[in-house]
View 1 (spheres, rainbow, N blue to C red):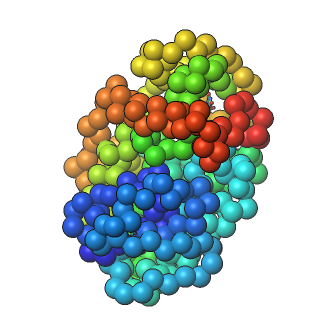
View 2 (cartoon, rainbow, N blue to C red; view 1 turned 90 degrees about the vertical axis):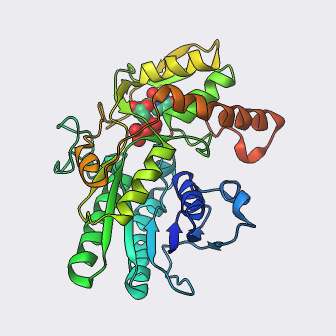
Length: 330
Ligand code: UDP
């Protein structure tokens, strides 16, 4: 296969590039580096079968040659990024997704769209099944991301129903691993950065809110299976083991042997109180479930964050912490 991966220099996109190349496919990564990074794909620059196109997909674009699949992974994805890049986030979910769909239509390629558990909002149904329609504030501080992704789901369905594009859709739950940006503001990189840097660990609210964290290799294996499958409706992919954010902080403090203290900050507006995927459908149609436990996954991720923190200390300005407290997010 020859696959185009938009957002190919992002956290998940770059792992997908690696996976497809390792399985003998050709990859064209497309990225504007708005939140992605050249460092995530630098190791591929001399790899046979890999090509990179620097492109903002909110503008029309083409890719020369045959394309068998388009995987649409371009978007800011951390709450701090999408609050900082509100209009860009709405544009990539709308115009960007349409440009990627047009590429798939033109090339008669399969289209796999990266959606998110955020389409469920602050969910009233728990755990979340694909049949749940969600509980989303359309004008709240997360709306630029949630509504962009909900719109993009509708757009994908419209192109499937009326333009004959063969589509797949994954709803991705919290995922972690190497290549997350240290300063992207999400809980996991933030806690690693704070613990390894000897700073206070900032918990928004009482820390009783829950998430379920999936190691990146499990996620991309599920995405690969979904692309090959016949399942055209959305499929949740994530780890169903749910923990509180306070517990995550404590685990990271223990793993890094840090002396950092946990401090509470005001809760974020519209922050989902609980989140856990129901993955029965993925089990059934993809024969997929996560294999990497949180203990293993956090251990696998630690050396990466150690290196990032060391670089920051050495003064690489690109990796300096953007912030260390709340306030920017609402
Ligand atoms: N969170 C926190 N401290 C931080 C960053 C995040 O307590 O420094 C909380 C946040 O309020 C949310 C959870 O951790 O309840 C997960 O946030 P994250 O930004 O990782 O992703 P989300 O699941 O909200 O998209």
